[in-house]
Amino acid sequence: MILPVLDEAEAMPHVLAAMPPGFVPLVVDNGSRDGSASVASRHGARVVREPRCGFGAACFAGLQAARSDVVCFMDCDGSLDPGQLPLVAGPVICGEADLCVGARNPEPGAWPWHARAGNRVLALELRRRFGFGLTDLGPMRSAGREALLALDLRDRGVGWPLEMVIKAGVAGWSVAEVGVSYRVRAGGRSKVSGSARGTLRTLRDMAALIA
Image (cartoon, rainbow, N blue to C red; front, side, top):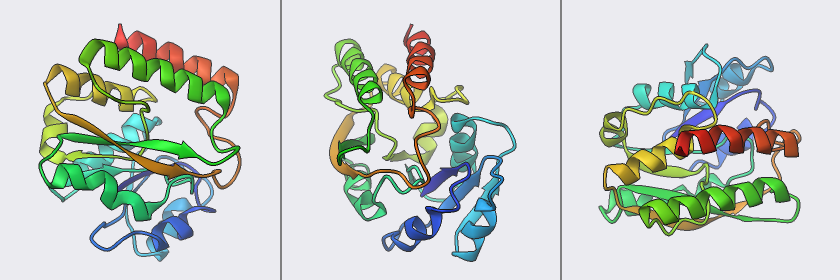
């Protein structure tokens, strides 16, 4: 269970306490200044430090350090429920899919309209290109570790989740989607999609990746 982290000390105790049996948390600290790494260690998580800035850099470091055959990724800001990880991992563990993505069902105020609209545009473009029935490029997902390494993902920023799905499509992977709850994150708005400007910047980078 790979948890990329940047200043999530407030949410982390709850997230780690809610981890279901069989899911071992691997926290990748991406330069936190609020003691997130120490909090993770005190709550029993294995901690890896990734000094290179970027969401993709943290995810890739976790992928390299993971020891399980199937890996899961999840934000550690309290917006997602760790108890639903078995729903996302199940299709991959059972061999029903190569990649499974958790589609967010947001509570009021959890997902800004601009971020939701941008995400929808990207999902529709992936459906057009690869036939995936995705409605969301959700941050909770699962796949086989060795298969992910073989995709040779290169993006070390916010384009990591999109590159994963694009390369999965090129490689002919089967991709599944399950619904997961999405709550208001702890500690304020998202670092990526918390503002319209941030969403536009992310869409620009992801559109370049698709191209």
